[in-house]
Every structure is written in structure tokens, then in C-alpha cells.
Image 1 (tube, rainbow, N blue to C red):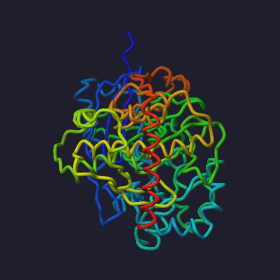
Image 2: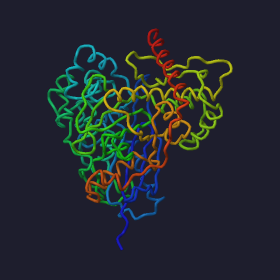
Image 3: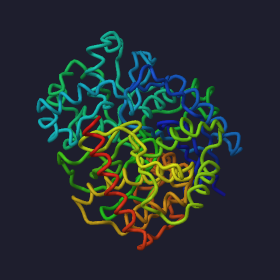
Image 4: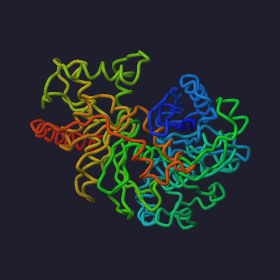
Length: 500
């Protein structure tokens, strides 16, 4: 009898380091997570210790192995995923030259704004296929070249979160196509580095920092003895290239054709679909290379999603309860559900604590509070504000394609039935929730299964390893209420942008 095969996915996102083990059918065997300590050097700057992130990942892997009680040698392959963009700089020994910079960082805002106004962004668009924004590596490298040239001088490689984790596992330095194609450091159309791209952004000297590019399912090394000692993994376990977390969630959602769309509601709110042809348009946030060879991923996204709830709970409600996930969402759902049907009377919340996704930036705000409003009304406003931020992106995407039959939904918000129903009612499109709790890690595990040839390609692996757990049908009677509130939301943001 053949021994069962397992695949390990490691996911370093905006707030958590996670590891999850899956069998060959995509069934989650065990998972563990650690909260990442975010470092706010000054307002608008967001960093983390890459070394601490690796130690947290290693600890989570050990816990997964203990919980699953499997022989580590039964893990057939490993792949990593994580937040895209930001910046992880390492030296020739693979040691970080400074703290990693997160994808919510704003220190390079002036540089991104200058590129928008002086025409650089427009010149780069046909090559990079994406807009410029402060936390992309191109802007961060330009900022560091000006303010921390010693960090650039010491560095030998630009990496992303999952690349750094893979480096710790294997000792090998590689870039990977999906992450690198979302960085504005390469030509997305050709899938190669491009000297013209670097020259446009004034960072030609950083070409030496760009590692060779691998695909998501390419083998990129094996677990070293040092990594095995830190994690409990078996020495020599194959490690695949892995992918940008938007690709991982896309795969785990079953996205393998043009008809489908998916939504990720986490630290960032990402809304996406795939196509064999890249879409290049000044009004689209980003086009990148998808993990399936020959496909592109079109994305509208911003840091306007569930991170606003974390802020509200910790800073406004001042709750220090460490409970997360289902228990926290259950409490919130109970408060919101007790209010009954959606009402125009509840306040408007602009979910721009970490950034705005409108052409004229507006500040985060509650507007329309009354003495009769309490925690429930404010929480519902936060829920609705995040829904409206996603709806803004969905409407932009639907300018380029027909509405889908349904939208696959992943991220922390997927644990909240009340919140997900709001999405369905506002969009008036059915929402489907894929099975599983760690879908980013599942997407990575799918790449690992393809990398060793257990499945011949991504469609076969996705067909075998994913399934739908829930379906939320839109309530047609609630559509007009949400349309009215969405109009108020946009009018409120426009008014506040004018007086900011």
C-alpha cells in the first residue's frame, strides 16, 4: 500500500505567519499561525523583522508537525506564499540588511506622486502594466537610494516575503515570476527584466539586486540541515518557487478560467480575474503574471479591507481579547445581526485608515453618528465601508469584462457569514466560499503538488484539491438600500477629500 503524500504551504501575510499541511486531495490536516509584530518607525511607515518572521514560520511549522503527528519524510514538497510588494533586502550571506518594509508602507508617497505628475508612470505603464504606488519596490528602492544608500550598497538581492522564507529553507536566492511581475521592476508583457523599466524609475544601479526568475512550480532547492533543525522538516524535502498571495488565493478559489472572479478580503482588499491576454489600462490598478503559464491576473486592490476592523476593535473598542478568527467574527456578527435589516440611518465609515482607493484621497472617518448609535451601528458601518471599498474595485473591473456568474471569496472576512452576505447583497452577485481555512497556504500547496509532478498541471491540481463550502445568494430587496448607501459613501468621501 502506498504511503499518503502531504504538501506543506507556508503563508506570510500582512499580519500572520501561517503554516498548513494538506493531503493530496487538498484536505487540511493541521495548521498553525503566529502574529507578526509590525514596527511603525514613524507615522505612515510600516516594517517588520524578516528574521523574526522566519522564526515565527519555523515555530508554526513545528506546531503543524506535532499536531499532525506525521513523519516529516511524508511531506512530498513545500511551497511558500506571502504578501506581495514591500521590500526584503538581503546581503551575500542571506542576512537582512535592514528591517523588511511592508506593503502598507507610505514613506515613498512623494516619489510615487512625482512619477504620476511628471509622466514617468504613463511611460512605464505599457511595460509594467500597473500603476505606481508607494510600497512597490521601485518606489522603495528609489527612496532608499536617496535616504539610506548604505542599505542599497550592502544588499545583493531584492526579495519578497515568500522568497525570504524560501531562502531560509533552502539557502538559495531566487526571484519568482508572479511576485516579481507585480513589482514594477520588470516587463510584464515579456516576462523578463527590462533595462528600460529600471531607467524610467531612475534605479538602473539596482539591476544587480534582481535574482534569476523562477516559475511558481519550478523546484528552487531543498530543505537544508539548518532549516530542518529549526523546523522539524526532513532534510532534502523539495521546495517549489511559490507565489504572490493573490495567485495562491486565486488557485485555492478554483480560478482557472476567464469566466471566474475572486475576491480576497484581508489586510488588502484584492479583486481579480485571469485572462490569456494582459490588460494594460491607466484605470486598472495592476496586471501581473498568473501562476498558470501563459495567463495574466488583472487586479484591483487597496489596503482598505479587513485591517480596518482590526484597527476598530483594538483602537476604538479598545478590546485586548486575543481571540481572532471565528470567535471574534461571531461576536461581531451577533452585534450587527441584532440590528436587523440594513438601514440608511446607520453612519458611513470610510475605510481609509491605511490608504484610500479613490482618485481624490479622503481620510478615514465616521460620518453621521447620532446619540442613538452604539457599538453595533458603528461596527455595521465598518462592515459596510469595507464592502463599499471592494465594490469600488469590482465596478472598475466590470468596465473591462462581463459580470461573473459568481465571485469566489477568501480571506479573514470569509469567516463572517453576516459580512459575506453584505457583499452578496451589495454586489447583487452570488458569493461562493471555498472550503478550508488557510487558502493562501493551500494555493502554495497546489504549486508544490504540481512541482513534483503529482498533478500534471494547475487545472488538474485545482480540480482535485479545491471545493466550494458555502454559497450566499443575494437578497434582491436589499440591493436598492446598498446602492443608496454606496452613493452616500462616495459623496462623503468626495466632500472630505475637498477639505482634507
